Image (cartoon, rainbow, N blue to C red; front, side, top):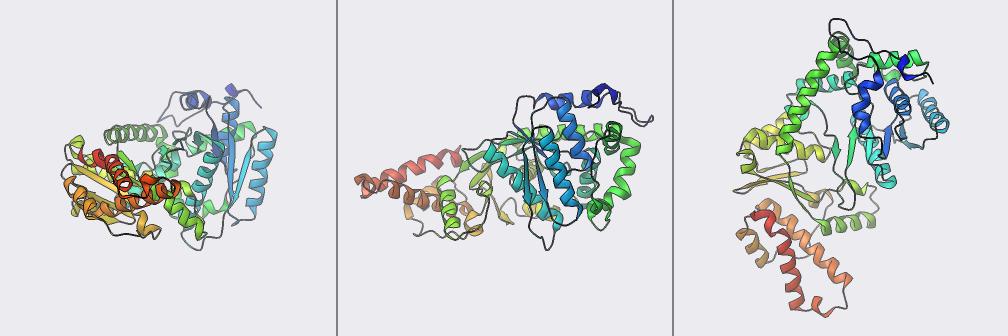
Length: 423
């Protein structure tokens, strides 16, 4: 492999970014992943192939994962090339075979891809997911969202941290080292190094919305104004991060309800990645954002994205008009005097039915602690699931089969949720 100083990064002279070496530009991004367990999302295209060799050059540890969609004959060669690179450079190569998608290919393919990546992250304890999105990709997303009427929370794409809905698992960080690098510089990098890569023929199909934006607008703008666009996106990213840092959510995890859902899914053989089941109530105190409606909407955006969902402009309007008291998709959004709450309606999503009606004592507790009515059924389901699990685990213990034992269990459960709704 050629020495890294053989590659010189050049920009349009009307819009110069002062740098001489691609590795030097990427050094800050690479510094944080020198000692971590990294998984590279690979496709054999120019972006991920360039990143593969840059990681090698900078001695960053990583393995690769690729998805075979079975939509093009060339895909067999792309997967074979990924395996060849992995074998040559002593990397693990994971391959997933996607099913046929009848509609919404881009959305379904993306969902399948991230499910695959996350399953590997959980199984093999990776801490960072490396993606090869570059400057052109970021501008494409921004322009597409701009035409939909998106706010700052969605203009820049998904957050760089994903929430695994299992407290025993660590969250993982998404790193996009190439996010400020124009795509044409990656072509130049591979050409000057003699690095093989594949071109996806479907990228030429303008019936795909992203391709239309790419060829009609984004490539032309990036070729002319790459450095300025990179700086603007960086400033916007910092602004969004500063705002979102203000919007740190308190969380209440409904662990027993999740266990019940997992058992039910197992019993009926429903194929589902269990790490995606969200039994969490997110909350923020209104005073934290001075009861600012725009910041509260940004909070809703943030939580939805943590759950892998992008709120549309119409949905944001509905949330606002309802004064944060509505149901959007599977999200319950509600509030009390002091707080905003967001939770996924896991009861309806997984068709969970409680075996006993809500007790009078529980209703009194909810009313006195200002628990919003839209959330009470979730908390009752959590209590019922918790009680069932405890009685099953300790069937021989006298205190769980008499009234005194039930009272102790109920009191303990109420203590768990008390502060979440009153502080």
